[in-house]
Length: 245
Image (cartoon, rainbow, N blue to C red; front, top):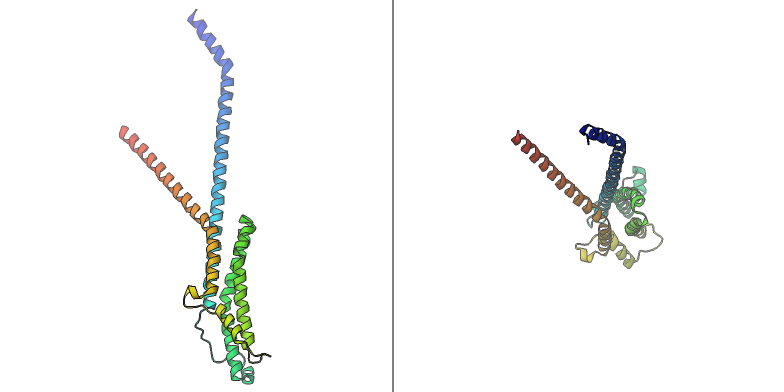
């Protein structure tokens, strides 16, 4: 067969098949790009979810720890307060010595309670955000802290009411003892039932939240290691090209 004829035949075949080949290549490229895009989107979503859970878990644990410290401040066994309450001079003249002492003590407890009320408010706000991400389960985990805070507040209020000089009844020694066991910390954890209960609740919450923090750090460590390997490969490639030239 004439070489010129073969050449013309080849050109005709290429003209006929080239659009089809082009379409196949473009379709394949689009599929690959779509796959890479979806995989990238999936990875981005996982990273976003991991970052959100990490930040939220850290904020929630921080607010719980701050509340724990505030409660410890309320329950500190040493309490110092003024011999006279902070009231107008006219009112002060009307009070007996016992009334002055009681009112000064009540004001000292009120001042002590303020950081606890503030920390509890921050915890409640953070918990609302946590419920959006994790649902009611996390709310139920934190609920026992509400109970313990309420117990402490009630113990202080009840103690002040029963020790008020103008109370219509005499305080019962056993009841005061029970209130003081909640109100004031003991010198060791084993002797302090209230603190043991609080620490147990916090430990349970830590078991729920710390995996989110640990997973974030593992992912970050993996990403940093991968980035270092990529940088090393690029550096080696550049060095190889420089040497070749």
